[in-house]
Length: 200
Image (cartoon, rainbow, N blue to C red; front, side, top):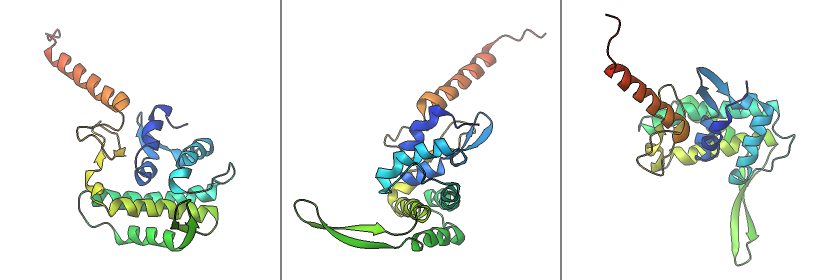
């Protein structure tokens, strides 16, 4: 089963850590794992390459790389949920992210940006290791800032998508999908309650 294309916007517009968490979704009563689908995961990764400074080729996102990324996602899920409520995350999840970072050590490198010397941090290692470390770093960057307390779970019943609202009134991961479904369901329930009982 291919992931539902209407959800692509929410899979590509949140902080990278949440975009990773959201690659496992509950849609139409079915769990869908975006990382299980080679074409879809390659498209998703290509959209993140620039944000995470990863060099991506068509052949780079192998099953082995996907497995490494799933492990980081599991740790991210285990950390983000308690962290957004101000609670202590599991030690095993923190250790897992730290292991992913140590596997691809970062070192500063100086370069001339046209006006001045600047230092950038660059990681070294095979692609699968770099990919896991990049998302581990993105997760740590999110959970160690005040923004983590603003992360919300979509208000739609059964939706498991997380988002960081830029508008404090935002309630759904995708207003055009979850918002509409919620409004339709409420409309139906309201009118069902108002309808005369014809069974007597």
